[in-house]
Image (cartoon, rainbow, N blue to C red; front, side, top):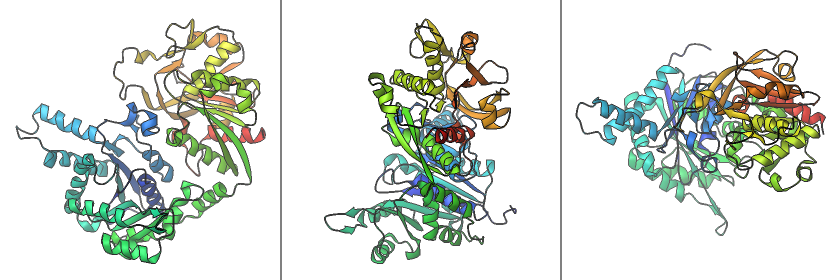
Length: 539
């Protein structure tokens, strides 16, 4: 890529009317288009909540925690950023109000403010702007896209919007685009789309001193010309910059193509005075076509603890989609609450599935159901993929039912278990805090020659992202291996078990890490690809 000759550009993505409009997807989709125009794009998220990071949040409230290479526990939108672009993000790409206030208060305690009264303006807003500037230096790029979490009008988001207002003046408005994602609801009784919520949302922004140049309109119905004109006039946005973002029919990966048809990337490039070629989207189009029009289908069961919430396993579902598309097939996903398998015979629920996936999680709830699902997959030779806790329950199940170690369990669930085949990591024994205190981030794994894992990965060393406190207890290694349990991957020093598999099974692999955090649309993760291939063979 040629060295940039223009000043760095900034795009700020705000949202209004309601939450969960898909600001992160809109930002990521725009990143896809700009990257395919030959521009280097970096994305970041500003989250207004006071948690330092989402690592301690309940998945039912916040969805999955997405882990980066450097161990940062972040919002799931950073997963969209990494999947939709070539970005490899770090903790610098994720900022919360909690981090901002923590930094400001630490400076105050040190005396950095020289006795001045510490206030939201300028001290908090200055710290927010510092995060923008430091990221610009740390990860140089042509365009930095920053998503502001929450909804315009939320009191906790005001410091971020004020900081952006100041920042625009400092870098020059010609180098900034404010893009606002809004809802244009269809009122069934009136039989029409309503623009008033968007008008009110933009009015809130304008009170702060921010005027969006682009309006992304989430809608279930087409935006007719009269609706676009009304939005343009009352929101003070050029008509051509009123962009329809209708709910996609099949896949979130259609969104870049939809926004391209609306001319979003062209509008942004014109506003930022960027003379770059049209986006080359042929490879992306081929991927989307395989997702929408697969030649075959495969039924996969995901047995989880947070199954009723779609976002709790977001990266897993996307990784399955990537692997399925690579194999030109679609996924018929069967979401199974692990607790239901504690009381029901798993055969009645799992008898028709081609593969079983057991994801991670914390706490004892639903674990026995996961163990029952794992036993079903082992005994019936159904392809199985276990992730993090999924590896631990696979170990417990094998110890109980094959090695006959009565009461085998994890110390997490039963500290007094007779056989703690899973126990606390040595480095975790003195840890008392919960936030950012697990084994986190990317760690190397050596893969044993002659194993299924070695065949799947095609290499003897890998690097994968982790998030766990408990591990395989090596005191039980010989007993389990004697019965056909294969430890196919370990840490370089051999002290931590990272990958396990079973002999005489078409595909039974489980890992202590989270491979779902490194899968991309046209580069599916090897463990997921192998799992889908084996599941197709089991149809």
